[in-house]
Length: 290
Image (cartoon, rainbow, N blue to C red; front, side):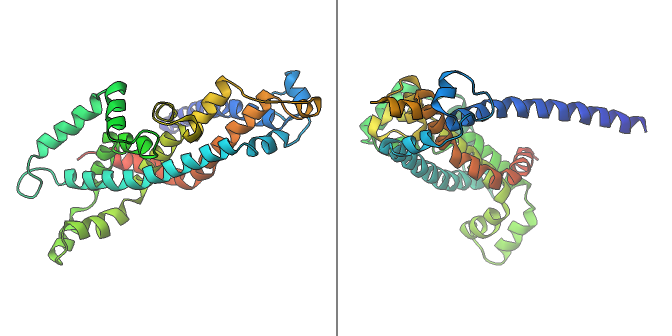
């Protein structure tokens, strides 16, 4: 009875803290959404808090007329899809090989590869050497400059590797007895059972690539900047041309920036609910190391 009471108290406090953190995260986003949907007069008078005043879609119609925003949105979509596809492929293959360990059944030089990945995770060449490599390889102002430098993440390799190690070895041994090789075991046994951790790593990659703006500023020209880089430039230096009083009455720079921010965040808001159910399971199982 006492233990149940203690658990209930802990759960109550935990729930209160989680609700407070959720409110802290939601309120700024709700404010941005309200500003984007409010009238220019209400926004200019600083009357908007967490509910639209003078509801209208003028800022969204103006934002969607901007061809540069649509181009940046497409570049971010292309970057994210390629990063997830190529990143999961390469990362899972490396994790499968490393999950075999060393010795007769594993790969030669297993400890060397593990040390190489750990050193690469802790240390990197830095911004200038990476920029020189990207430019010397002719990748500047191409989509590959955004994808290749971050395609392999050692943390994700370790996460998937531990997930592979946690799967029953009997499944793998049965496949080998039936004549399967490593490719068949990897493609037909390990990958189908790894949906939770793949979804988790995929979600990490989607959010990371979508929000990352520095690479777009360094490696891309402004007309080819991804969405996050476009938003950073639009917010820091608003470039709005309001030629008459009628246009000024419909929207202002703040409401237009708020609409651009919401449009930029919308793809992540649509994807997250479909992957969230895999998230906790993938993290917990992948974090267990036997």
